Amino acid sequence: MSFQQGVSGLTASARNLEVIGNNVANASTVGAKVARAEFADVYARAVSGGASAIGLGVSQTAVTQQFSQGSFRSTDGPLDMAINGGGFFQLKDLTGNSQYTRNGQFKVDRDGYVVNAQSARLLGYPANDRGVLVPGQAQPLMMPTAGIKPSTTANVTLELNLDARAAATYNATATPAINFNDAKTYNNATSVNVFDSKGQEVSLTYFFQKSAADTWNVYAAANGLAVNPDGNGVAQPISSITFPTNGSAPVNQTDPSLPLGPVAFDVPATSNLQGAATEPISGVKLDMATLTQYGAVFGVTNVTQDGFPPGQLNAIKVQPNGIVLATYSSGQSTPIGQVELATFRNVQGLQPLGGNVWGATYESGDPVPGTPGAGNLGVLQAGVVEESNIDLTAELVSMMVAQRIYQANAQTIKTQDSVLQTLVNLR
Image (cartoon, rainbow, N blue to C red; front, top):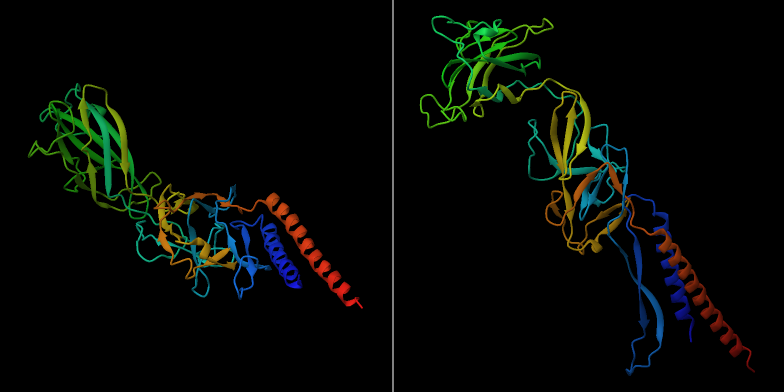
């Protein structure tokens, strides 16, 4: 018997206690992963071989981390997020080095970048001014610092039913013109607010005047001012529509086998209800392809337009697929980017760098990037963070076991010392 076995046991037990102590210390650390010390026995290389060699103790072979999913905890952070499944958030630190983490506690720095507590920037795909994601190399994500600019209305879509039983209100002799203030000169009307280049509202009203069986004239007025193809302020139809006998979608008057295409018209400059002058809107396209003419009362199913006023940033929302939406006071929601995740062939090969981040190594392999939900990558859950996967009770039990093993190894050294003392005292 020698001191070597006992000393190696003390060393191994001390290392094990260090690992367990680190686990206990990080039990409440967001995104932390439990570590495990691994050991192997040690034998001297036998000169003559044989199966009766006595071991020389124990040695530590590795400290591995277990990347199982931790539980989720709700937070109030607008950019807090957790990965429900596999993968890591990708970061770039201040020196440009790549880092990877499961800690989804993010915020916006003074430059508008999404960063973690160590100011490392979250990577993803940016969106252009139209809210379209730009694929390619992942870049540090930025949040908007200003409001959204107004967008001029370019398209209006009407979904409604015109009553096939209605009597014609147009007669070339008796009623040669429409009077927007006289409901007897038209059958039905519906309105939608559109927006000019300054984001000012213009009330656009469409009037439907039945001129003959299955045929209707369509007029428009902007804030009460007639809209017409000639632009002279005189009420003229912007379109004339014809329905087939079955009352389904209107057809092209030139070729009834074709559906009715969009009708383009210009909205003149007017004054709104507040008395402010509005800008003219050119080339508004009216889509009436889904209109019907059935024997039922006039009814509007939906009226949509694609313009909007300016707005201030209200909130940031992260969707499960990683798309980050900015919502504005105008009611608009615009994609501003998409979070990119990464996975590895061997996550055990990742190197802990501190600060709840890991670095890629030769053993881990190169990162395999992708969007949340693709392949074996998890989806994102907003408003929560992933807690550590450390079982505090189990770690405290392991600590007591490691402490007993340490005491037992100390006892072997004490016993060996007693044996040597006996030999020294022999005379």
